[in-house]
Image 1 (cartoon, rainbow, N blue to C red):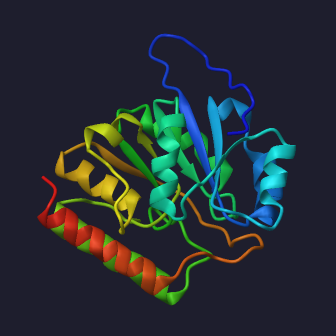
Image 2: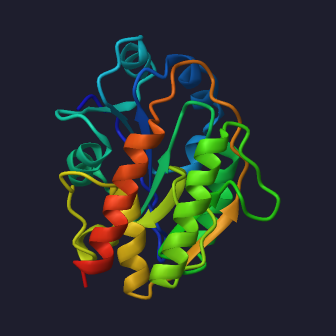
Length: 237
């Protein structure tokens, strides 16, 4: 890893925040979004790159950000390789492509301080809106949210958004391992629900992506979500 020294503030009751930036050819978005992220919002910042070829890696290094280059592709592999580097009590996952709004980081942290285990920045709560949705992605998210609410006794409006915070301790407590397939973040949320942990949401708009190409394949990712839901419903207790 190429890292700068991170400064942590030690005081009683303080929860350290690790902000995780996930990238794959997001140079245009990085140039706009990263300068908006204030250092006082986090204790540790790690950029996890999945193999960018557009100058994203060079930008990360030039600006002194801590960089983790994935050895294997995929979101599950990113989390698996990342966890041993994380030093915060709270992990925030953030997309630098313009879809995640930096100003929602402080209220997300404040919500976690209320005793929540996971907090999602929902694009569909209390008037929040996604300006990047298609008919297919909007319907898919609605369908999967309804399904997990019914099957797992949850009350969530946005299952699929990347922008969320969770306690690092949950990864071990809930035995979250990188599945061969399926959704890592959905697995975490569903297992937390089955353990009756405290889940919450805050509203947050999703602006349009800034440059680059979306990595979302509705059919492929929809099948991964479905596989995760079925597996967690019948296998993990």
